[in-house]
Amino acid sequence: MTIQFEKLKARLLANPKVKAEYEALAPEFEIAAELLRARLRAGLSQTELAARMGTSQSTIARLENGHTLPSTKTLLRYAEATGSKFRVRLSAA
Image (tube, rainbow, N blue to C red; front, top):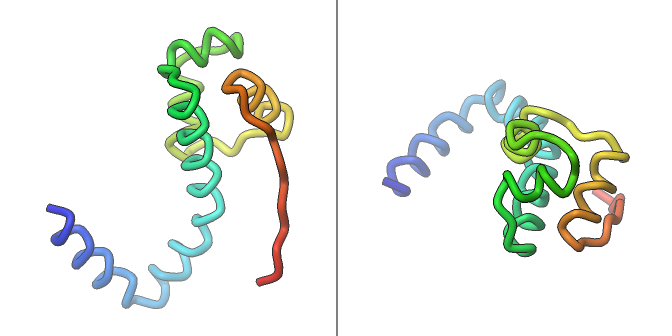
């Protein structure tokens, strides 16, 4: 299954317009992946994390699937609730 996905992905990314859109969304998905890693590292379910943050499980799901860009305040609350340290880093391209 993974091999078929990788072949499809490679074929789609051969299209310059698709590749440009994919790359434009990369930062948002990187944030979502980092949030998910922090929650898993803390050993929390989405429901448990939501309770710690005073929000809903569906809000956590939206943050972790990349469909919602979190504010800095939300990132700080998420970090605190998962026992993580929040850092921002800009690097040379």
